[in-house]
Length: 282
Image 1: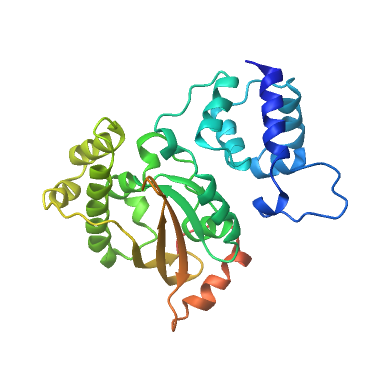
Image 2 (image 1 turned 135 degrees about the vertical axis):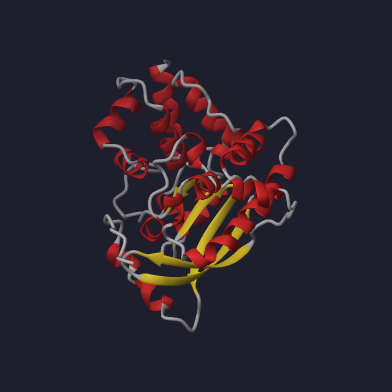
């Protein structure tokens, strides 16, 4: 690993970012350009001591998960993200730009502090969530491999449907299948990500196979969903979507349906936070 060069690159990226760009307050006594080391560490979910060692070029080789977190914290472009992995002697993640949060999407997500929001790929892999999205939907960052796609989990793992009323499942399934067909058609023919996802679902889910055979195609641009939250109860939300220019990433944000008690219930999310929930009884 090129320790010194890695540290110098991280420092250069840190110094170019203004605190307000990442949702931090720029105090009057700030003596350094850009972000402080401890602020980068906080944004990346690392300890200040660990990040200091990495930037000094004296730490251990950062994991791929840590590199991804640093790339998000420092708003790296796709090329900069790849360079970061090369400096750390780590393989660049497969999927190219689709696996790296677009800086513009991340900037918008940072500014959405009062509503649940998250950035996902066109294959419904969650890239980053704000705290309110985690409180509403759960933390999706723990999933790896094929299970990282919520579409895959929806059709193969009954637990993925727990937050949604059973009577809504058929409509959700139909929308997921139509959206996946639209996303797969838009991707380059050489891209195996979508084809592998579809093949796996055809093999494991009779429900998906039946829907896929209908050849419905429609991107999910806006939805009205009912979420059966274990603490808040039934919450009705509008799910709005902003697509990146290439269609590979989507910023989703959730607003309560006006005229319902969901307005008051969503306001409680910030109070409830991300504590562990247990499903309420049937």
